[in-house]
Amino acid sequence: MTGPFRGPGGWLRCQLHSHTTNSDGDATPQGLVDHYARAGFDVLAITDHWHATSHEHDRVTVIASSELSARVPEQELEEAEVLAIGADVVPEPREHFATVEQCAAWVREQGGVPFLAHPYWSGLSAHHVLDAPSLAGIELYNGGSELANGNGLSDALWDLVSHAGRACTGVATDDCHYPGHDSLLAWTMVRAESRDQAAVLEALNAGRFYGSSGAVLHDVRVGPDAIEVECSPAVAVTLRSGPWDGGRVNADPRRMNWRGEALSRSPQGLITAARFRLPERWPWARVDVAAADGGRAWTNPEPVALDPDPSDEGGWLPDR
Ligand SMILES: [Zn+2]
Image (cartoon, rainbow, N blue to C red; front, side, top):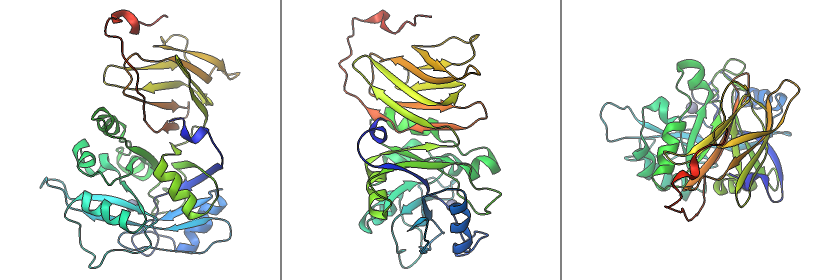
């Protein structure tokens, strides 16, 4: 959660899910990279189905990657798909892996970073993540799925994975097939020491990134008794935590805040900084920012070892 806002390096705007004419995309590799270069992206992972597309570009770091498929036990579900970020080969023969874990482990063996693609769109459940320990994380938000089917956001599944005690990061992506029509919807801001592929993959593995569909996170700090967030103007800043836990600060003064307060506001009254009191039970927490235009930003969940005081029954009542 706080990792990308600390330490050395700079921010890289990364698109980690995209397709070209090497699978079912509309643009050539050159056309796709030019599109993202013009939009100001620093890094593009081309994730054609069962095809590792590499491409040299003078402005954008192109990471040869692919989108692979695995069978799932449930007959009614077609398959699961896994983003093989940084694996520059695909398996032969090009057949579905027997399980998500076998697929993710293969990606790891190639030096790649595996993320489970669009779990909500695929109809998957938390156990598909929990049964695949080699996964680095999930595609928390898939802009193309949201645009086409309204099922691009997998945050409830993400939280169930955290409830089960599993560290799991979340990337936000376009899954672009038709640049200009389903692109520039979502991206992942990676904090890396350089623009090299190795530095980007290392940061993805370490969770030094946050996903965005428009909102910007400037800082997230965890102190001894509070979490402070600085962000682009927001209608709500949310602290997600355990099943009965969390808090929210709302820009609209008619709406109550829960366990938090706004520290500063834009001239329009939107929240630009917020503070939350630390939950007394805090197995993990993450921050979620919502902008007025629907754009969001999501930090990764971070486990925190706090000793809850079981006698502190009234501790979570809000002061309003
Ligand atoms: Zn895809």
